[in-house]
Amino acid sequence: MILLMNMSLLILIISNIMMLLSIVLSKKSSLDREKCSPFECGFDPKSSARIPFSLHFFLIAMIFLIFDVEIALIFPIVPLFKMVNFFIWSKISFFFIMILLIGLYHEWNQNMLNWTN
Image 1 (cartoon, rainbow, N blue to C red):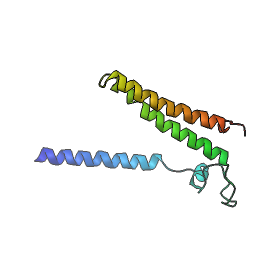
Image 2: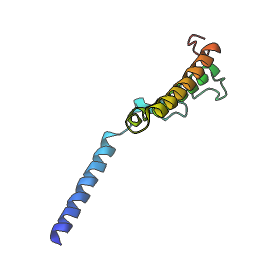
Image 3: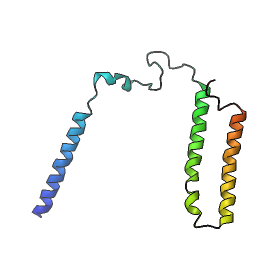
Image 4: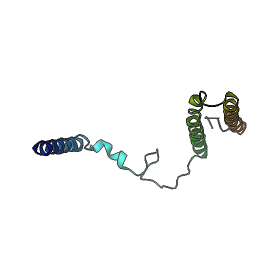
């Protein structure tokens, strides 16, 4: 029983020391004042919040997110190669990659991949 109380006390002391260290080490300086501003995306927080947003930047960000999610969906295809029939695996993989390529061609055709505009 005493050993359990000593261990609990030790755990409590160590956790309190860790919390105290994190509070002391993470003090914000006056140089971090900009981090507390409501806009951290390049807009001046002192001016109007109704500045027009670049639609091109938004569409490029959406393209990135779509392809990022699709790449995350491709990862499980490789380990499935050992578990399923090769014909089914190749048909599904080909179909998925064709969807990606058709989407990429459509974005290229619509000039969405021009970064300089």
